[in-house]
Image (cartoon, rainbow, N blue to C red; front, top):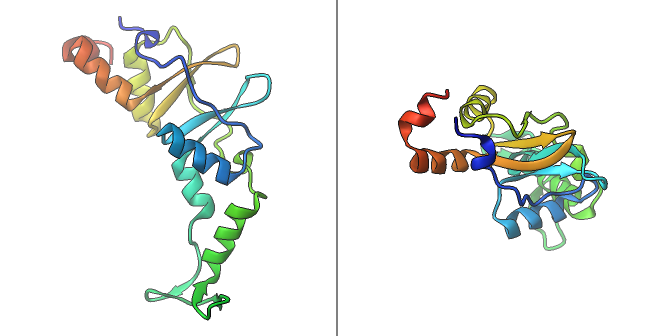
Length: 164
């Protein structure tokens, strides 16, 4: 059996629930990751957040007619700006929306004694791209779909397939 501890990343970059969306966006870009665990000051896992959550929080959800937005305002230079785009930008820039407002609060997790096959099954079953490894509510590591592909190369298809 290939244990998840053989393929998981132990040094995990995390975010805090009180971070602003701008701080989150900068962090994801700087770390070159698409998501991260959210931990409180005591290091306890309280959620997970991803670029999908960020885009949904600041995305354009305004009404439109064809390809043109119905509701909008003229900016200071006389340019038409969709109202939903302005509200989204302001929500992003003013810092009122926090990571806690957009994160998944009950993330799918596994324990360090899980096998690579069990982790792969959880990723597929839940349609997720990363699985947080915890014990006693504390973050121990993270496994991504990319980690599983690397394990496939390193350990071979037959050994991985025998665990699923």
